[in-house]
Image (cartoon, rainbow, N blue to C red; front, side, top):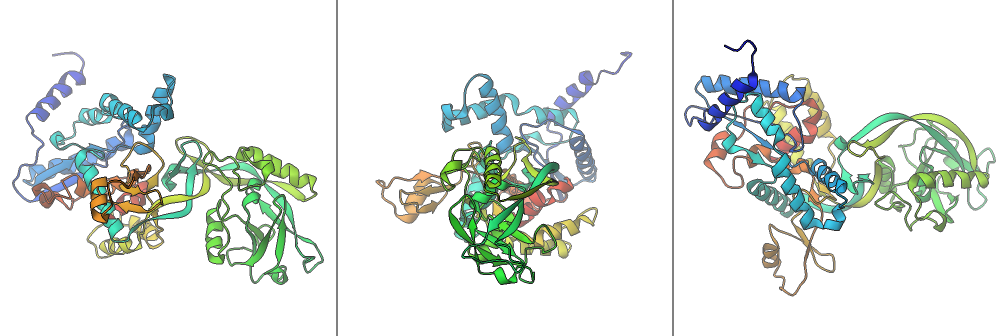
Length: 503
């Protein structure tokens, strides 16, 4: 016997034996018991959390297998849209090649090539853990069957009026040039400033104490260029007489109204809030309530666009910030500057400051889907362990907002929608189906939407897509719904809740 234990000599040999003899396949006998592995990113590597969760799942599966149950531990990986695209882009850039130079089709060829060469590391690591998984059933969120399931769900939800295209505010990553989810935004406290600006009142109006201006405070001076109102609290006696009057917006040669809205806290700041509906989520809601103009002042790179005054066009947003402050000071309209700690949203993959950005995206109207998902937990059909996480689930679900599902990437499930030259939208499983469904002539040129779906959209279909849906297979009838899901609390909303809604 060797004096030291060499795990690679023993464990690898025996695991290969177990796998080749199909020891972990469902027995076909007894009541079913199934668990899906939360699909790790194809770019990923195992960490301690994976080891902990896999140990729990493996123990449950082995126990129920020994108890005579017909067990399935469903394994697979997630295509991880942004993460994978970034890995391949960086690899190409090291070779002096840019994604845009290759074009979409050739770039996707490179991604698939990378996936075949390097994308299976995490599944090999799961094998090293000794997981009793039936690897013959391994799935990938962009394999042919799951891609068909994604298209089917999209088309059905669109036909039911639950998927729509709208011009709304999103988290925009100026480096990736795509919308990102809240989960992909890190809000950390940083040192910043409050700039206090005096906005001149129009038409000779004055405040109750005789001032010809009102003062606002902002942490983002460049957004002044997109202001479309100043809001005050309707019960604030200092400004009641100004409601309905106008301001000459500095640097912009246009007027904006003074409006009343309960959103304004009269105790915070100056009691006057500049409203930039196209670049702030709270302001966006105020803008909708008051039917304000929404002026997008940024390009996809977060430079100043042609909607802003000529002097600022083409500037990077932070250069524009400095210039706006300098110009306001020169005009005698900078009242003061105070140090201020604030939460700054940054992309978790790029580190750049995320910009609230008004753009056309695809959305799922989720309220009607959330109601049965809430009821399933209330009635005990689905249980959280520990139970206190139900409160987190309910808090999210009862205040749910429509889900932005489009991403401006190349790697992912391309949105099954086509446009004609006039911008009409046709949704279907293929261009041929679209032409047949809408009786479109072959001479009418159609272009497929360039966007792909949020990775969480395909992940939400994982429990019923992996056993074969939309086909009603024996595996689907046997192993769906699943019995247990072992996952992290941080994705209760982003993954668990969406799976429940989609199911």
